[in-house]
Length: 143
Length: 424
Ligand SMILES: Cc1ncc(COP(=O)(O)O)c(C=O)c1O
Image (cartoon, rainbow over all chains, first blue to last red; front, side, top):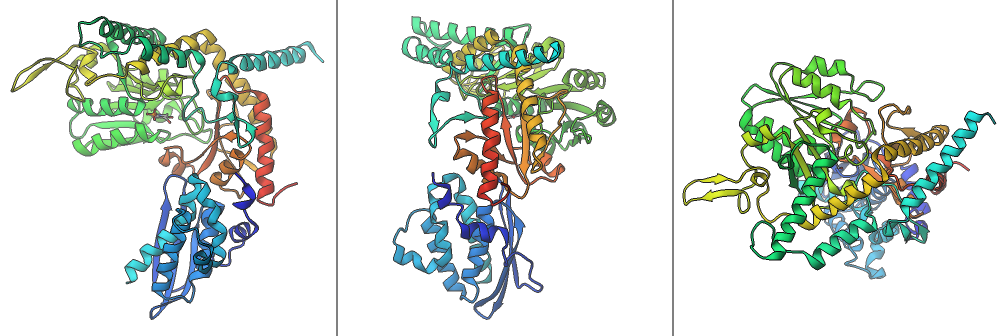
């Protein structure tokens, strides 16, 4: 196992100083996500402008992978439509499950591609996908 | 060097030799993980097996295997004998009076579920069950559900600042309504050893039945069940060098006789009529279905091995190793230990966190150095909540661990810090 391919600079940066980690004043939607077995715990808050996700932020605690994954996801989905965001969630989960390996197809995940190597660490997969599942739940509620 | 210091140094060396000598008997420990010699520090979760246990199970399967108790043929008789010999060994191991008092189960969890199920016959609405916040989920959920089914009150004991449950806390919470008191012998999170003998005495004075969860006790602490005087005692073979899938429930004979069976089916009956049946005598009454004979045979070999090493020596050496690790960890300002720093009533389990690093990341990074440790809530969420911890890393020793391994583990903590951009 190559640690450097998992604990990359980008991930460590997002883990340490996430600009997305705060609460939103008047969020339209708040969704709680939890990995009981390891204690990762996040609350995702979203604001909408019609069909668009206009603002997103999170609070909570957990390992570097879960925190960075959440922060990177928020960067990606801000300004996207609900439909686009749901599609990105599916692509991300497929990448972690190794269902999609095509670089071309993964390119739309942008920085979130940095989490691809987690797919080689079964024990950490659930840390990486927590926020994405949480977002999916939230958007399903909205729809 | 004073002679006392010299003596101490000698002791250290002999302790080290002790561990190295026994470690050689464990084939699994001779491998590399991620390119490094394996260090196995997850013994509270499960322990490893020496050659003698592997051989005993293998030999049973190669030469004896048959369904015990059922057939008139030679192999069936031999399998029955092997199974009953194992039961007798367990009886001697905890110094129980009779073999019928030893019920084989799958593990501690099943033992406690069996009990909570069967004890339902002895409780009624308004009664109280007393447990502690230290307990493993296995010693919480069965009681919680029994309490829900029968409308009982489930009460908890809490530790003091020193991580120990004071006897005064027990005295305060015991009432005439307390019907069941269930407590762990040793916490799998903080490593604290509870004064179970004194606790059992107090609970008995109030007329409560006493259940001891020996999952972490039996492997590390010499336990004389008659001296301890618990009514029931549960433990798992896989945490004491034995195979997975074999566990024990000890119960006082006169109590087990009054309790209804848990699982029903073959092996546990006397007469079955179309309507209504009578049950087999102890211990078969509680052992429905084909038992895990190879597991029992493996457990017997494990006990024989432990007796050869000596439980008192095991405890003494583990304490020495724990002291060594605690002393060094105390010096590191980025380590926060979630448990007592003194050695009184304490076993070889250390839960801890590194400042600003989640335990899950910690476990992943030390694994890359070949070191197996646990992270998470350790199946003790109420305790974690009580200490306001989200999760911790945990190292847990057995007598085959060495000080050199502790040193390498401490070095790996530096590496964890480096990956996170802290420290040197
Ligand atoms: C104190 C305690 N009780 C019960 C258990 C459950 O043991 P098992 O999983 O073997 O049933 C454990 C195992 O971690 C434990 O540490």
